[in-house]
Image (cartoon, rainbow, N blue to C red; front, side, top):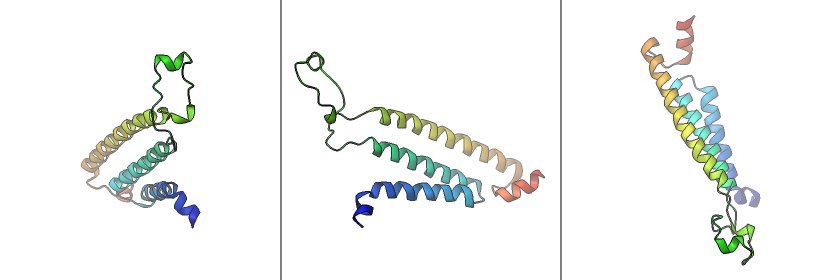
Length: 126
């Protein structure tokens, strides 16, 4: 039980990813599939942001001129790595763009087929 409590954030990501995956695979409504995709993407972003966290790392790696010339010893363990956070900002922008395009396509499909149910759209195509 201690293992589950100690790694609660990983369990949350797994649950969110499985909810999103289930919605994308099992649901036949296109809006539900899009929401599932968005939940899946959000779980992945939260996972990477939490992986970048370091216990005891309280500051960003902003070094002064004195730090670079050896007057003070640089303690690498004190600094957080900002790269995963920056990459996840990019992933958030891509996620929003993907959501917007998917919703626009869903609107176009609704206008053409008058339904958002995948089975009915496939029947209308055939």
